[in-house]
Structures are given as C-alpha cells and as structure tokens.
Image (cartoon, rainbow, N blue to C red; front, side, top):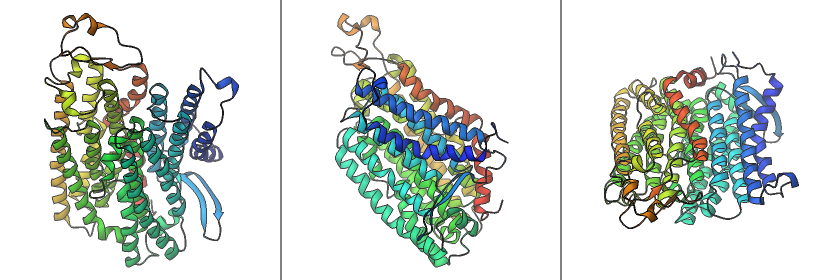
Length: 550
C-alpha cells in the first residue's frame, strides 16, 4: 500500500535528490546570492538559502515516504545501482527499507528545524555562509549514510560528517570549544580507521562490498574467525560514534561546547549512525561474530545506562555546579545504552525496540537541547546551581510555556507511558528477557534487571532537573521596581533585573514554537501510535535476522 502512487524512476530521483541536494546547496551557499534573493543583507540571504534547501529536502523525503510501499517494508525501494569503481567492485548503490526510511525522515526534519531556528537565532561566530554550508554538508553525509548499500560508500558517508561537526563546534561553540572539537575528531577518526579495516576484511573475503548481497548470504561466505575479527574492528568504530561506554568521553565535552543546533544534530542524528551500522551491517553480515560479542555488548550497554544516570544525578545535585547541557549529554549515554542492549539481544523484539528508541531519542533529546539552548540564551548560563538560585528558577511562573515544554520533554525522556520514550525501552527489556538462541538467558535477564533499574535512575535525575529549573518562588510583576518592568528589547530574550529580583524572561517565541512543536507532536504521536514505526521496522528486521528471507 502506498499513500501516493509514484513511479520507480521518480522514487529513484527523489532518493538521489535527497542525498545530493544538500551538497549542491552547500556549494551554492558559498557563492554570491543572485540579485533578487539578497534580501536586506547577504547574511539574511544565506540563512534563507539554508531554510530553502533543507525545506526542499524535507519535502522530498515526505514525498518519498508517501510513495513508499508500506506493504513491503522489508524490500529495498527507490534503488539505484551504478558501477563506480569497477576495479574494486564499488558501486553507487542506494535504497531504503523500513529500517532506513524513519532515520532518513528524522534527519531531514531535524536539519530543517535547525536551519529555521538559525535563521532567527544564529550562533555567534564567523561567516553565516560557512555555517550554513557546513550544516548542509553534514546533512548530506548523514542522509547518505542511511541510504547507501555499499560498504565503502557507507564508510565515506560515515566519515563525511566529521569535518563539518568539528568546525561547527570549534568555530561556533562556547567555552573550551577547541579542546572539545579536537577530542571529538580524534576519537571518531581513530575509531573509523579500525572500522575501515573490518569493512575491507569483509569485502575482500566475501568478494563483494554490496550490503544487500552480503546480508542475503548471512555470513555463510565468511568463516567464524573472520566474522569475529570483523565485528570487533567494525564494532569499535561504530561504538565510538554511538557512543558506548567506555568510549563515550568525547560526547559530554562536545555537547557542552557545541552551539544549540550543533547539539541537536549531534544527539538527534549523528549518534544514530553508529547504531544503524550495527543493525544494517553487523547483525545480518556477521551473525556468528555478533553472537560471540553480544553478551559483552549488552554488558557495556547496561553499564552505560547506569553510569550515564549516575553521572546525571551527580550533576543535578545541589552545589555540583552541573551544566544542564552536559547533563543531557550524559543522559544520551544512558539512552543509547538501551539501543545497544536491544541490538545485543539479536531478537526481532529487541532490535525493533532499539530502532524505536533511536527515533524517540532523536525527537526528545533534540527537543531538550533546543530548550536548554533557549534557557541558556535567557539566563546567560546553563549552570544548574545558578539557574536554581536561592528559590529555584521558577520557569513555571516566569515563562510558563517554556517551563511546561521542558517538563514535557523531561517526562518523555524518562519513558512515561503514552510518549515515544516508553516503547523503545520496554521492547528492549522484553528482548533481553528472551534473547536469541545461543545467548545466555540468565546473563541477559540480569542485564534486563540492571536496565530496568536504570529507568528508575533516569526518572530520578529528570524530576530533580524539573524541580530545580521549573519550580520555585516567583516575584510578582507588581512587586518589581519600575526599572524591572521595562519591556525587554525584541532581540534580548532575557535580561538581568535589579538586585534581588528574578530575571524577566520572554516565553516561547514564534520562531521557537515553529522549531519545537513538530518534535513535541511527533513524540506524542509515536507514543500513542507506535505501530506507525513498528509497522515499518518489524518486517525489515525479521528479514534481516533471517538472512534475507522474508
């Protein structure tokens, strides 16, 4: 069943356009704007260009989704297969199925919302032209990662996002941005070198780099020892990007230093590339190797869940001087631990839970970073102790809509039933209760219990954050001095008031509502109607785990 009947050739064009258009848009962003599109100044023109290109890619992705045959989500659709480097057998092979389509849509949506937000709230830094060009290159690389079906092409797309993110952090970030950017690039590059060796090993031993052919073969052309080495090498590279404990230490620094849109894209999109690689490459291509390492992957995953939650609790306590952005970054370590645990079960239930948690994390954590960025803009800091002050930041009283949305995102992140965060964690734990044949049930049930304990810790630190940031006493407007009642400038969302008075804050602005509402709405939709995602992923996962057999 398709929503709109679209011919295969148009579907091919749409997928190719989605991958290539941001790259062409990045080149165009660096060129002078045509006379009729310059607007009031060159900066406005290039920011409008970013919104236009990312908007066109989002529209193309939505049209592609409406033309997708939802009755056959396990079949690769909109495929293009062209020989590129015949000597190495490398092909430009593109296609989407029920696993990659949601990630493609998530990437297109988040990048458009970031471009829209940046049009009104550009982070301080060098040329807006360079900023928009880097965001578009980042989008192209991420979309290509989810669309390519050749191992070497996957590696190139996987690496394509590193340089743009490095410069977004190093040039437009906050304090300690250069050190954080260097840490990010060094960790990910070192992991990628090891991953390339594993990809080459698979391609050379099997005689092909085609991911569809390799998945159909289901490891039968590779010896167990080759699979074990390949999973170890590729898994390290993917685990760094995910990130998996203990390879996570670059993430909190990168998030703390990155501009708001950089944090949104890093958490919402880039982390998904690592977990996608586990599902798309290692599970179907090297199942014996994955079975060998699955218990260790699950163990690292649950340690990450508990470690991330304990780190958040330490940052949230009174007097810790914890940075709210850093806290959300550590929460990502815990949430991605659930994704890795689901993958480690090697069951349809667990892997579906992992893919659902991937999308939920992108929506919820993307929204959280938008909100924390807005709070930092208003208060001038993201330090929890400074925000809480003597009586609490009292967002409910000073900016009620902003406070309510932050509370909504927090309870979504802790896995409240009825919101998107619930289903991924629940399915992951169900998968761990009954792992795949050959995996130790007692071990995985222990991992399930530890993961369930992690959900309680998550609820604890999120509720502490809401209490400290949103609740507290609020000085009524009538009790403020005349100077404190002076309306703020339109470009100043929050300003300090007289000594002893709370800062007067702007509530959610129109452009902020436009950027945040889709994420909140989709969080509710996915929570109330999980079949919208599971209907796509489940048949594709079943086929993937069965070695290409439907």
